[in-house]
Each structure stands twice: as structure tokens, then as C-alpha cells.
Length: 558
Ligand code: MFK
Image (cartoon, rainbow, N blue to C red; front, side):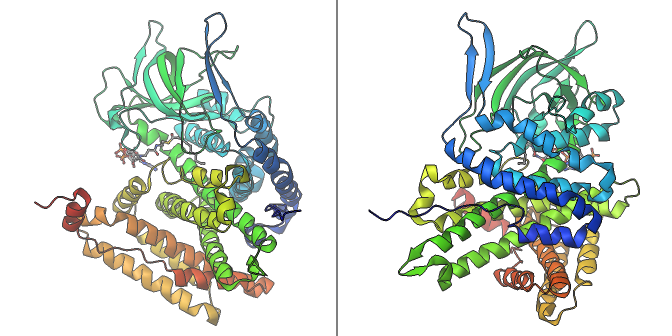
């Protein structure tokens, strides 16, 4: 009998996750952890032994759109994967949205929710996308103060009852652009009964099967530009399931996220409700963007964790040149770098989740809101970039097997590639970070956070790490100061700046957690992760010259 290699296997994804479990032990009140831990354990088991194998078996499925029935009636019916058909019920029952709004756990509710999301996402076939939008829509409607819509939709968006639960979409992107929405062409007109109706074309309507959507449109008579857009609420379907004056042109044929039905749609007088004012729609939808961006970071971290869990398990099964991979120094070094990067992403993401939870409490102070505003794009862009590179590296750990579709591994890489793109590309978010630094307290909230974190670290072994955090923070402040009058140079270096903020904060968080882990639990692994992350480096500030970049980017000498 010829040799066959045993494939990688997943253990219980909660019990197997040292990072998540130790974070929850450090942060949550013991009574809360006791209350939620059996659910997390059960969910971690379902992820590994129920969702993951079923999705591997269904890897080749793509959603299908049928435009017409046998008699020529327009139906625009979409067939979803087997998992997608039941994922809404799983999400509702498991509290994937509801947990974040549970008043019982106050500021910790978000940690509970994002722990569930982090476990769920890599075995969700990107059902995490509509969940992110659902969470974002709930937050956005609550922020709008529109009581009618809040009462109508929020109890459903946050429901634990599958029969009540609603999902939301977020239709922003048009053929004119996704990063810059100022050229949006969708118009809103009031009909003879005063009802708003939308006319236009939305170009990337993710999760088109969702029950509601928040979207931007330009009320008739409003000026051109982004400020002339307003935020609208849509219930796209009638009670019988047919679309309300909406036609689906086609589903996108995408690099990844293939189970997620992303559509090009036409709004042909679709009834809609104005959410707030009849302009400033970008400002109005921003709470949704911020929540989905945090979900993006959670999902990036979840993908990285999944890729590493599979690669680590495989390394124990795979023998090469007479030695298991896991015992080979170079392979150990590769996995160790990935682990350090994962730990950095993890602590950065969950720190922002904690901030979101605090900011949603009645007594929230202004400075934690400012820090949250700065760190949301920073965490999104930092983790997304690491996820793509890290998942690619983890797939390489399988050699040729990682390049074969029915191993399930190529899907991970294709799916990860969406993370730096949607919800704001790396560059768009880096420019957003510059705007925040200009308008929202400058670097001060960041400096205060770094000071607070490093003050909690006193182990001698971590001194060099803390020194590196402080020195890089000083370098950031000097870098900004030096360029404060040259917009071009600031913009050209914005990505390096944002990544340095993300990585420096991640290092400070790693050090803080390492100090606690060593003292409270005698666990040296977080300390080693912090030191390795420090060696990989956190300073990504660039000295790039705009004139050199102009010449090389266009490759023109003139
Ligand atoms: C797996 C998890 C992920 C799930 C993803 C779900 C998939 C969804 C698919 C999609 O829909 S992807 C498309 C998402 N689109 C984007 O993320 C847009 C990316 N572009 C930007 O973010 C641009 O920066 C932006 C459109 C916001 C630029 O537009 P403007 O008009 O130049 O905005 P400006 O002037 O920066 O901001 C307008 C107002 O909004 C300002 O307030 P004021 O009017 O009071 O001055 C800003 O402060 C405010 N604002 C903008 N971004 C904000 C914000 N406020 C809070 N938070 C923000 N993030």
C-alpha cells in the first residue's frame, strides 16, 4: 500500500486557543467567564467538528442566481450553500450579534460577542460578512436616534430567535467608486404620497439575501459631492420574498468569498426610509463602517489563527527527511514568527473591542472615544495585511498539498485577500488615520494609551521590549512633527505611519499581557511572543520622497 499523508485536523477551537482563553481570564470578571465558558466550549466544538468538515465537503459550491421562472416571470432567486441556509439560525441562537448588546455584561459584552465571532468566522463561509453588517446597522440605527426605525429593526437585528432575526446589507459602492463615494449616482425621490423611492445601481451589494440594507442616495435637488448624499433604510423584499422594485443583474465572480452572494443590483423605485437628515450620509453611516472595520480585524485574526492551527497540526503529522516537521528548527522558526504575528493581531483587535465596549457605556469618556476612532482603522489595516501574508506563509507550510483546492487551504488565502480591500483599502484607511490625527486630538490619545500600557510592565525580561515601544512612539511623534507642513509627504508616508501605530500598540499590548501571564499564570509563552514580535520589528515609518515616488510610479522621466 502506497503511503498516504494524514490531513490536518482541528481541535475544539475554544479549548485549543491559548490566546483567547488567557485574555478572557485576565479581563473578564470570573463570574462572567464562568457563565459564558460552557457556551464558548460548545461553540468551539461545533466549529471544529460540525461546521469545518461540512464546509470542506462543500468547497466547490457557488451560489446561483436564476432570473426567471419557467413561465418567464422575473424571480431573481438565489440558491445559497447548505451552510448559508442555516447560518442565520446558528448566528441568532449563538448570540453572535445579541451578545454584543447584552446589558447584563455591560462593557464586557463586546468581548463576549467578538470571542464568538473570532471562533465562528473561519468556519462561517464568510457569513461573518452579513453579521458584521447586521451589527453595524444596529449600531448605526441606534446612533441615528430614529425611534421608528430603532423600534422596528434593532430588536430583530439583535435577536436570539431565528424566527425574528434579521440580517442587514450595506450598499455603498457604485460603478463610480467604492473608496470615494462622492460620485454616487443613486437618487432618492419622493412619490406622490411622500414616500422616498431610490433609483440607481449598486455595484457590490454584499449578502444580497439580507432582510434590510442601509444605503446612500442623493435626494433630488441635493448638491453633487459626498455631503449631498443621505442615509436610507431599505427592506428589499415583500412578505412573499419577492424583491421590491429591485433587479439583480448578476452575482459577482470573485477571487474569494465565493459562498457570499455579492450582487450588482438596480434600484427601480425601491421604497426607502430616510434615516436622519437629508444630507451628510457618510457621517450618518460612519458608525456602521467602524463596527464592520472592527469585525474585519476580528476576522483577519480568526483566519490567521485557523491557518496556523492547521499548519501546526500538520507539522506534527508530516515527517520530512526522517524528522517530523514540528521538530525541524527552520520550520519551528517559521511557525514561531507566525505565532508572534498572530498574538500581535489578536491583542490589538481585542483591545479595540474592549474600547468599543467601554465607549458604548453611558459613562464613557471622550478620550476613549477618540482613541477608538483612531484605532479602528489602524487595527483594520494592520491585521488585514498580516492576515494575507500570514495565511500565505501558513499555506506554504503544506508544500504542494496547500495548493490543492479540496484541501480547503487555497480558499483561506483567497478569502483573506478581501480583508485589506473591503471596508476601506489599506491606503484609504491610512488617509483616514491622517484625518483623525488632524481633527481628533492628534497623537495624544495614542501616547496616553501607550504610557498606560507600558506602566503595567515591570518584568526585567520585558525591559528591552518596553524600550522599543517608547522609542518607536517617539519616532512616530517626530516623524509627524517633521512633516506637519507638507501634506504630500504626510500622505505618501501615511501607510507606514498607520502600520507603525498598529504594530507599536500591538507590542505594548503583548508586553502588558506577557507581564500578567508570567506573574499570574507562570506562562512564559506570551513573553517570548512579545520578544519575537519586537525582533520582527514595529517601525514601518518611511522616508519616501514624493518626487521619487512620482517618477517610479509612472515610470516617466520628465
Ligand atoms: C468580515 C467583516 C467585514 C464585513 C464587511 C462587509 C462588506 C461590506 C461591503 C461594502 O460595503 S465595502 C464598502 C465599504 N466602503 C467603505 O468602507 C468606504 C471607504 N471610503 C472611506 O472610508 C472614505 O474615507 C470616505 C467614504 C469616508 C470618505 O468620504 P468623504 O465624504 O471624503 O468623508 P469625510 O469628509 O472624510 O467624512 C465625512 C464625515 O463623516 C465627517 O464628519 P463631519 O461631516 O462631521 O466633518 C467625518 O468625520 C465622518 N466620518 C468619516 N469616516 C468616519 C467618520 N466618522 C466616524 N468614523 C468614521 N470612520
